[in-house]
Image 1: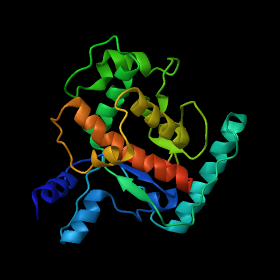
Image 2 (image 1 turned 135 degrees about the horizontal axis):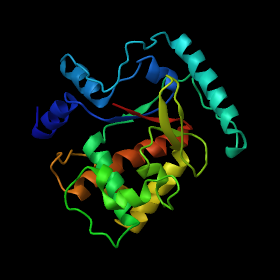
Image 3 (image 1 turned 90 degrees about the vertical axis):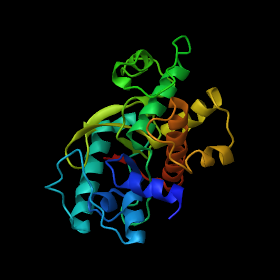
Image 4 (image 1 turned 180 degrees about the vertical axis):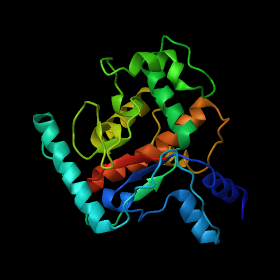
Length: 248
């Protein structure tokens, strides 16, 4: 096993933040693998996942989950009404999905990078710091703040395959209240962030997520890694018309 392969594998054994794009039936019935699970299976290791939330009441039967998801989607569409350009709809029969692992430090660094991109008057930290008390994040995160990047910054857990510009909090399929945004809005805002800061081409962006830079890497290195992952997943979700969900 080479150095980079070891790094990816052992990183997969720790508590991590994954991002999933695909049908929610596959997600909630557990019929998918994150990067750590896939690596462990390939190498014949047992994978033990530590979660930050209780999933003891999870439903495993795909048909039961599919009905639950479709009912939830219909209820959310009804609640949003004319705020959406059309009713929420995507294929819950397919088993195709995509996943990536930006990790907590990577996604947090991306949130900070976006916050400082729209507040250049503030000195940007060189290393990743907890964004909860960060001044740039504090300006951009409130729902009434004017932000170029609400789908990136506002701690979204679900990005829906519908085109709208706002974020909102509502129950997810399992009943937990979480933040929602638009997958199309996310993709547009990621491209805008690149235009405002790095101005990198597609090949360069793809190369950013080849090797995990490490949790102690610079803010920019971590942000680039997560950016590459999130662009790939957002592109997939928009092309396939699928929701995106964080997994932790």
